[in-house]
Length: 165
Image 1 (cartoon, rainbow, N blue to C red):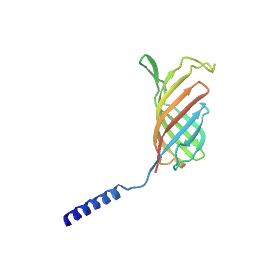
Image 2: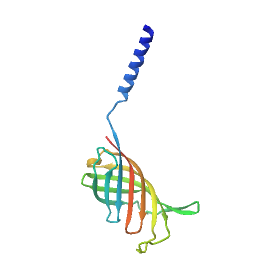
Image 3: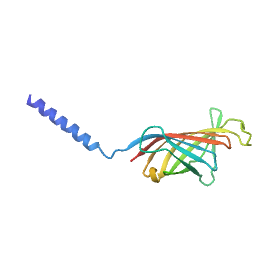
Image 4: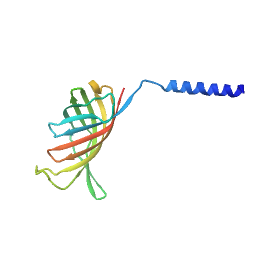
């Protein structure tokens, strides 16, 4: 009987030490959405999709593309896809600046629906946090994006998870 109790005590101690060792500073993942519209004078709204440390914010968007910003066209299953190099978006709001890097792939939809002289398209992409200030300081994360490019207007929505230390 004493041997069984000793084994149970050792197991309980091991579980306790393991849980204490793995406990560290608490970080919380929060699901968010970012909507942007109308380049070149773009605006954004960051809205939490679940309760957490980040609060709703809105403001202006600055677009940063690398030099010689050109798409690389490929054919996938017979459709032309334009793959663009990553771009940087600086979202400056009342609560700070969130800078993200995004890579996306565009497909023309074969029409100029709003008559602005530009072919309309849609895109999907991925994004990742580069840096932040204010409420976005030391934040990490990223997610996926969708775009509707109608020349002007142009709309985008990023959704993903941000980790707040």
